[in-house]
Image (cartoon, rainbow, N blue to C red; front, side, top):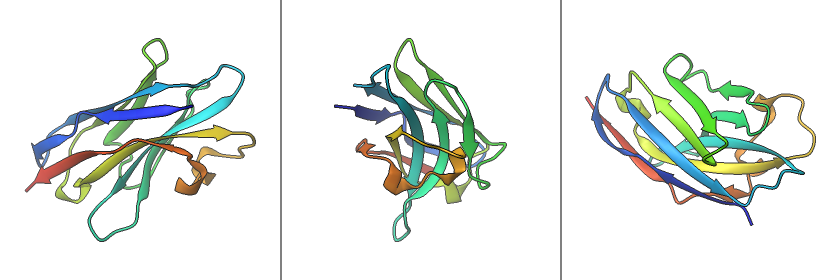
Length: 129
């Protein structure tokens, strides 16, 4: 069973940086996985922030975070990261890590939250103005 656990959220001033971490367990070498970071602000739908293919390393970013956020992974530590720079108050949200088993994929951007079967509990990021 795949399990993911986020950490690293907190309160930061606008323009600051934070790094989120997500430890992953249960991935098997005979399957292909995509890992994703999502966020959900109060009263809004959950939205994709960034994805990465666990084996290949291909990445995807939502336009709202391109150039400010960087997704990365350390396969030896089974850990996914999201490094967030130049944070804005509108980045305030609960951030979730999730895993999806990929069977067929044309492009990472095609993935939707519904494709991700394994979710963490979330970590709060608050950016003050």
